[in-house]
Image 1 (cartoon, helix red, strand yellow):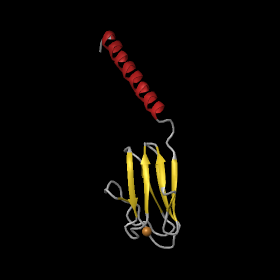
Image 2 (cartoon, helix red, strand yellow):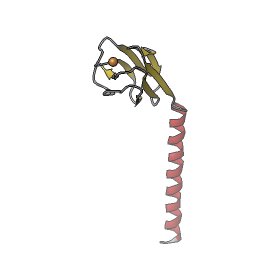
Image 3 (cartoon, helix red, strand yellow):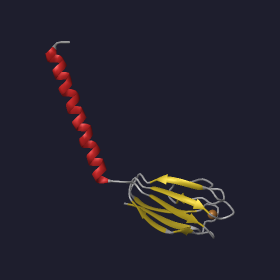
Image 4 (cartoon, rainbow, N blue to C red):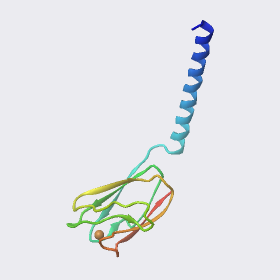
Length: 116
Ligand SMILES: [Cu+2]
């Protein structure tokens, strides 16, 4: 490789590096630090029963009852499946929207998750 070609290649790599840094900064500005939120399932209820999170945040459902529950979106966009007693299930909020969810084992258990 000639010296000129090597210099051009170095410039290309430098430009790509700057681009990556730029993309990284943009992503950081949009969402500095994803947070974790806990929803406790206890006494056949989701607490809180209305929670707002940001995209990228993680939501953890913790089952404090002595029997299983589920956290199932009414439109099928997420479904924990069975969460055994004293177990938990985590979801990373990837899409914005309002999610009405319930427990398929106890359909009167209803709650809302809002992702902004
Ligand atoms: Cu249940």
